[in-house]
Length: 504
Image 1 (cartoon, rainbow, N blue to C red):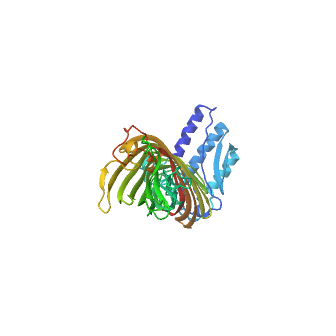
Image 2 (image 1 turned 90 degrees about the vertical axis):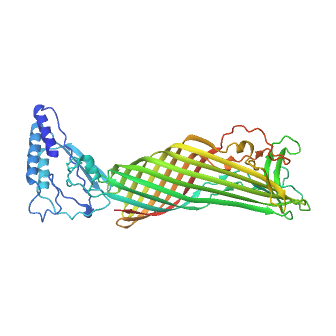
């Protein structure tokens, strides 16, 4: 293909002596990398010139050199371009040369030095046409077919253990205590009352991430898929009292305008004013899970012996589910009247969109370091489900449901959020840093750090509003519900990655 191009160029030079043709010959020599040394004449590829008694296409070389000489005599100008990698330094050379320079170049082709046999490494170099093919050779399948039917594809497989720390999930305080006898467990009504139970999660959560893909066209581009699953971030809050020790309660602000109810209040779980007044228990369970899946492509931008830089783009999916369940049991003494509140808040965030980013890898000896940064852009579908109920009865009989759709916090305007759906634009930047060691030729063990942030996520605890309307004489009584918007905000996960990469 190169010979045809230069003959066309010679014809152009004959028609216009003022035109100058630039021939670019790319040769990459890795100094010191004896396992990857290549020797090739312009017309072919020779692995061992010393033992090869029949030089490959020597006649083609001579014909091509004669054409170059004729072009040089006609124009008096010739371009020589070469690239040499010395370590990781790229030294391009492009200058006008004299005919004597060509003689030196020709002698180098005619008297090659023996080279060590080629051994496959992580450098992607495999072409059906030989080492001098510039992606324009005819393989019988066309350019697209040559890319797909590469003789030496590279497959990567990554498996990682995730040790991540999700962001804490906050909510209105679900507990209040007072250690002073006779002081009610209600915020602002007693200076010694202290709240608790306003955050969940945030601890170490294990997970798994897998990545598999394949390079085509000698590493020019690749297609891969990645899936990661973070285990459930479960957290619980349990407390109870019998009216003999500290006083406990679940705080709320009653918006009932009746002076008998309006203001700061609490469901007493263990009130002690010298004698037991209340006893009971509270159980809260919070759980969050995250699942992600990606299909992406890689495009090589630049590479050398010690680095590789790629651009990435593709499809991203995230599923973030958060659940918060509250069970409150309060017994009023001495009549032994039991009141039970059940509240359930569930949110789901499903992201579908695209991703764009880049990854750079650096190699020094057996050590590798890489940095992957990208941003996910797309639609976040948010779903909210709120359910509540209230039951009453005398112990030991089972309580009777008196408000089938009204709990303590899941009532009124908040209960109207049940079944809420909306779609919002969201973005999620992501960063992965890794340090690896080449344990075997195709096996790399690494440790890394990951950070992912979503700018708009609906969480269960954020939907709780401690301003509620309650009439203890009629738990079904409520204000007229009005439309309310869900509360959303940013959320992130971060942590350590431990894994291995296999390439073949």
